[in-house]
Length: 244
Image (cartoon, rainbow, N blue to C red; front, side, top):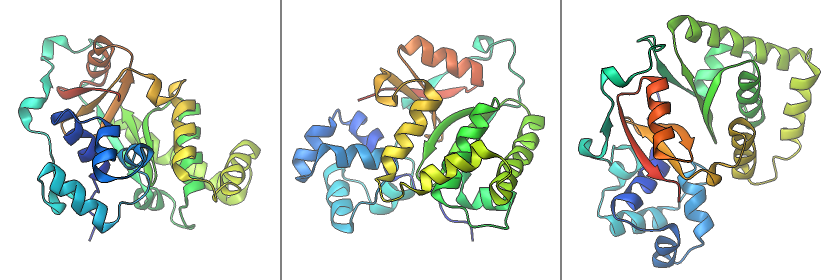
């Protein structure tokens, strides 16, 4: 049975926005560091059962809903009309989420570890893919056509094959660098990878936006840029959040 997607970090950030609660305010209420809240919202680290229970009690939601459910109601999303979509949209746009098990299916001979995930995400960005988000156990890629999605699988295989045979010095060196630092907090490496992909730290953007499934779809400095990104990705239902 396929593992259910854990939505804890996304739901935590959404609930803070809905109830207008800042990270520091929630941290003070729960007697923990603000950085812990920030780390959880980025999908890194694990809340203890006691912290999870305290958060659910604070926001009055069930643990199952907090971990796996969709918190945001439909009226929280903006709607992009068909006439507002960019002319170059294809009608085949899709955000592809790739977790460890998905990467394994692309090239199963080896165990998929953290270093491999980060290396593949950066290599896909280098060869021209729109990598949207990197998290602790995977990443997401925006694709415009079915052909691009088919090519994505082949390119992931080729990167993985290079890792197996160590026939690409750049790829091998990056994987070795990540593996040498596994003792460091993974969230720091995720943030560094995201900074390389976005051109600056995610926290430096004023806004980020989510699709109807609460997948992060982009970061921007203005709401207008978020809407422009939604047009580019042909995403008809989305919500914009202050990046706090």
